[in-house]
Image (cartoon, rainbow, N blue to C red; front, side):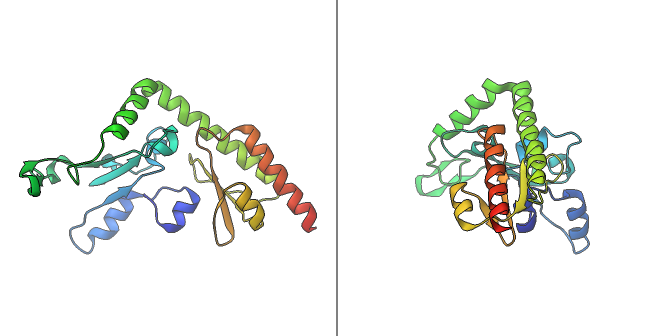
Length: 207
């Protein structure tokens, strides 16, 4: 879904444009790594060009990042016409469609329960609330001179990299001159305010 640069910024690559450019060199296979952004993209309007409808051949989506699940979980999807008739587990002589024939089903069950409990309306409401917090973060970080940035609809907000102690305190992901926050469900308006206050204090001390 995103290259290294766009991952830090929470941006979404344009799948049709990438496919068109690559096909100039021959047949291509487009995999979309939508781990953190797939559920968000699907509930963003206007929807970015990221899915099967836009030319992807396969994609993966994480369930725990946005949904706040207690264990990692995700889904990998492939266009039906690209799947073999069977996927074999040769060492036990059985047919199976999992990668190793021995994955625990608990994570899949928890993901299914979470999605069923939320439903389409609940999922849209969750994503909408997270996007509102991300937009709020942009405003607050701009007020304290942290130079925030955010791709349309994204939950990721970049800002000027703070001192190491502050990055450690807030468990911030950093790369080069940037740090970012990701406004998933547990990120509150209060947390954003507290982060902005720390950034303001740092700026004041530096001045």
